[in-house]
Length: 160
Image (cartoon, rainbow, N blue to C red; front, side, top):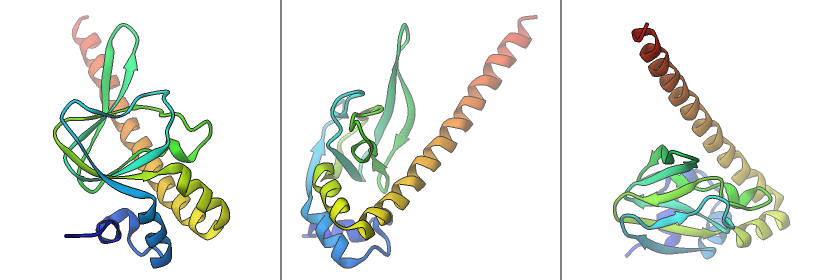
C-alpha cells in the first residue's frame, strides 16, 4: 500500500520538489473519495484545501444566472483542483463536482499557508507551481471563449 508521500511523489505537480517539503505537505493531507455528483467545492464557500486528483474526473463549473451551471473545464487523474486556498479571501472561485467516482488527496490549505509563511522557500516553490496551473487554465478558458465567439458569429452570419 502506498503512503501519502509516495502518492505525492508520483504526481507531476510535485516533481523535483525538495523531499523535506514533500514530507511536510503529505502531513497536511488525507486520502478521500467522492461519488459521482458530490461537490469537492462550492463557489464562494470557504476554500480551506486543494485536491490532487488520483483517479476520476472533476467538472470545474460556474453558475450563470438564467442559465445554470456551465462546465468550464474537466479535470482528471494527474490534475490539481483548487488554488483559492492560497489567495485571500480564501473563497472558492468555482464549483468542483465529481463526474464519476473520484479518488484524491485532500491537502489542508491552512496547514500549508502557515508552513509557507514560516518557510519562504516552500512558499515560493508552491507559488510557482500554482502560477503555472492558473496560467494554463486561463489559456484554456481563452481558447474556449474564442470557440464560443466563433460559434455565435457563425450562427449570426448564417441567419442573415
